[in-house]
Picture 1 (cartoon, one colour):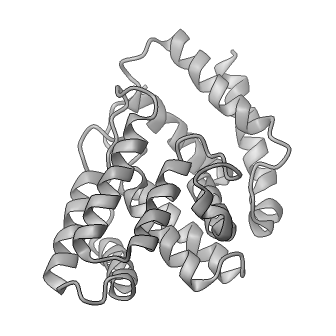
Picture 2: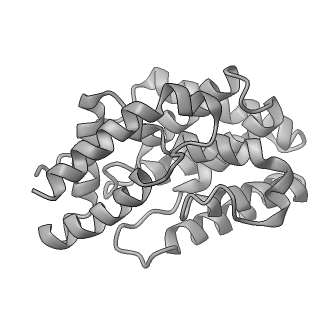
Length: 237
């Protein structure tokens, strides 16, 4: 196992990420000064670039945002829902510590989203939706969550599937992802890691429908099941 840090995104990719943030926030918080929006995205990128991260880093953020855009282009979520899903993606792992108690990262990230979006002047209804979307990523229960998401099921499905895009990644990227997750949990002994990781992956593998959007089900699901089966077999020796 290697503890090598993932390579940072190049300047072009970072510029693309920042442009996406500004485009969404110009709509959600039109009265926020550009300087405030810029300071926020810079802060978020610092969070996502923390040295202890191996998988939950800027690369993961970029992949989630790209997946949301793919789902939007496929007609799975409307422009409003895609915008809210992207903003939720920016915050969903803004707080990340592999040693934290279960649920702590998601709850702290959701609180950060609420506080910071309020400061930016995003309307309360949209803040509530983003906060609930971030909390959904705790257990990826796309059918549960806050009642306010009942009218936003396409938005929930888009973020749910985008966050799990990695499961269908090409074999080389999936293998890299598995190594990155192991590196984040380097403090956990091999046997305990294999037990815990197997439990998480088995839950996904046993779901009748791994993804929630039609596009992800038809385009991503078979590869995801293949990747899950291969990693589970390796974990079980």
